[in-house]
Length: 307
Length: 318
Ligand SMILES: Nc1ncnc2c1ncn2[C@@H]1O[C@H](COP(=O)(O)OP(=O)(O)OP(=O)(O)O)[C@@H](O)[C@H]1O
Ligand code: SF4
Ligand SMILES: [Mg+2]
Image (cartoon, rainbow over the protein chains, first blue to last red):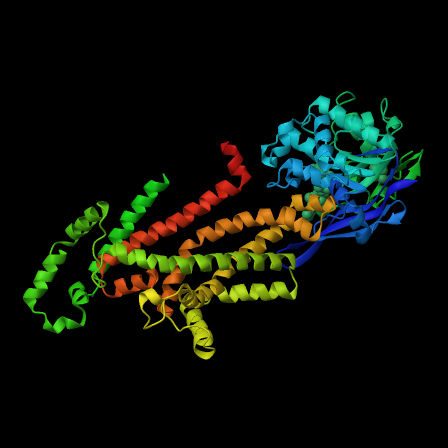
């Protein structure tokens, strides 16, 4: 049973050109992912592929000029605004992407304590700080006094003290030293093994493969493949989508071949398959319509030629 | 650094005011003598001029005056026939009462208005507050003063029409209550106008803060409504508001000059107008020095308040 299910999600932003003409940028389109209890799902994709927006859409904190369609279900029930209001911070927790998400005028210890639900907030905060090797003096610091790594550990702490069932971690590891990365990732593992679920957003496939169960690959605002980590072996024969294969081959320990071209901007998306302009396997058929997500060998893929 | 700027500014302002008054068509001797002009012969005029040093070149007069000031002597007011320092001291107390009350009242009320407008952004209450601020920000002080005077003092008769104390009452019989009664209308006038700036600024700042990443994250942690405002909105918006309010000292001073005029309130502002109109050079220059220091102190306090209140500057110094 999926604990969190995102189906056919689209997010667009209204903006104005020349002051008058209103245009809609579709930054996420027909995106579907599911998160199972007891599992870590890694979401990988290039910068700008919509990873953070997915996290914000789930928590209902998109900016007011964003419009959203599709469905998000938590424990098989639609996650309405009213339901979200009772679940946010209690059952669903976010680890945001940057230090800007900390209140600049509040001591970080207090910020972590406000995230704790029930029990002794102070000792909960001290315990989690100790776990992440944050010294006793850190709780009295303001965000501007933290190094990048300390800030990220503070952000992680807010989720860890919340007692949530689902953690959505938006790039929690860059800037951390290997010891702390290991600690954080094993925290996630432990957390999932206790029947909770983690969505780990990252653009680092390698570390994702080390702890995740499944990988969802994003491209230009949608999912192109959902695969088990076991598929990422050898030359990537088990991988379904040409983009995922290309990502895999681009890793230094593999063939280290960069992917030519770049991800299309939301304002100029191709009409057919979003990957077609860069795809080696593209045929005229690919440019007709955007392929649907389909099941293939125990995974999902959005490609008409995938086998 | 700050004090060097302050001193050069003071010297420049004094020199300019000095030259302006000296070149104005006002005859200081007539100002000194007042309406009894007719009885003064040319000989006496000369004596008076000599007494005040008015027969020397302007620049010499300026240096004479300047060295006296450096020795701590601001001279004697020609129209009040009292040492300038005493005139200023007495009036400063009145002005300070007026300005401080208006400053506090407009600061607090303006801040609350801004917060309410921002939290209820787009509703009728926000629109009313915005309309009020935009309309009021462009109303001249003396006009507002006259309006307030007319409504509350003339029509309703709730407050005395002007002055700092009741007319015809001995100085030692004037009670604190009397003084407060005379203070209310000028304070009201200054505050009605003074709220606009703080309110609009606070509104915009709070709207920005409520759309910031840290408020977004606080909402993702389940905070909402008043708790959200109290924990993250208030502290982030109070800081710039306090600084803005300190920096508004100079505007307050300008407003007080006009309000005191309308209400015949015996403060520094009224004395400035008198001194200017009647060519009382020592008093005018004394007032110029004093008000420059006053505004400067306001800006200094604004700076200091930021240093003390903002942890980003406070903790760095430790
Ligand atoms: N408030 C906004 N208004 C308009 N466009 C936006 C807004 N926020 C994000 N976008 C656009 O949406 C797209 C996806 O952004 P998102 O932040 O989700 O990327 P990301 O995958 O998290 O990238 P990164 O790895 O750099 O964090 C980008 O093209 C971005 O320009
Ligand atoms: S649908 Fe066509 S263009 Fe798109 S990924 Fe598959 S082969 Fe490439
Ligand atoms: Mg992101």
